[in-house]
Image (cartoon, rainbow, N blue to C red; front, side, top):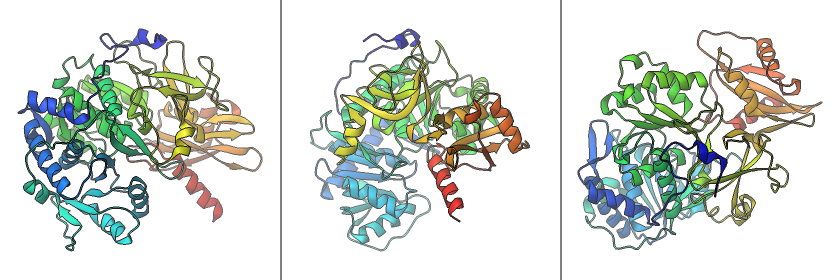
Length: 542
């Protein structure tokens, strides 16, 4: 397969990869055998070597079997960023279990849906959130049989019950022996649930093969700054229960063989503290993290220059923020795009060959992408014309768990229909225009929310912006934009509209402007347009 984008790959990055076809546990075992005394997990002033982490995972896997586990059972991991999360994951993979990463901030109804839909049997939960699971078990609406509580510094007491177990007790009681369970690359390794922004969240079926491909693609793309992958010291500040945080630290290290710094709470102070104490050379971030570090008063006397390379995703990174961070750190930032359905990444900007501002870069090795018409999704659009982005690749899910209708809707003839509107240029660089569901139909014209956002990002007074469509009696829908100003700046509604008129056709200019202090965001920093729409709807219904 020859594609225009190969010409802009960094030197040494292959167009295709030879995947060994091994289960994920085999990749971890390789590094345990090769570098047993190398630090695997670092958190605060503590660390575990590969050998030590493997020993704990073996003991835990033994105890999971004693709880009645059968190969193929789903096991949920419900914690913030803790070393125990990674250990639990390794223990589950030794057994051939399908892990169900779970946002601990979810409400009981949200958790009930996810646990019920997945058929989860065992939940590993951080103590401060575990009472939600207790409530769900008592409601009897799921198949959860066991709750394993992970205690942290702030110990939480639980009323004794035959279904509640302590994580440390299970480790202490387990046998330090690799379980004799055959796991293949085709076996399900993860049920990654989508964010549920278009309805109930759906479980993406990700096999060992999918995650292996994703990890190899990660390492391949990062060859230019990290010729020796074992030298990577990754700062895991993104939530590990999210596909982005999981893939760019834990999953990538399964093949890279590097070290993971587990960061619990990505505040600027905490990020800088970990940078100064552990000197990571790589980390995955969202724009808010970068802006926070850029504006930290102690950034100039920190060890920020330890960072060689980064990946940034979830929402667009302002040019000013990118340039400032690269100047402060000397690092190179690659910006990426992907979904839960794709094990995370589909495209990234190259490190050294060419940068196109606003683009999410080029398709990764072994990934093919087309831009097709929005109506039927069968006609490939000319370069530069917007359409739906569809993709093929070895990291793409096989479908949604117990949801053949939605599976058939997004997987057609081997292509994943992403629901994202994008353009591709003659060089193969892709620009995300919007989500199909975020497109505003204004007087018969298609208006893309992201296009309005991008215009306001250029304004030096604006820190962040997010446009939505709101009902309009004459136009059907009309654009409204929410704006967060930089500290000390002032701006009027008319100023915003006048600024937009310089860059946008009249029908795209927001007719409504609201200045706010904070945007509703997902756990990985994406602005939640749907939440803003719901706020507007609630206002109108008052």
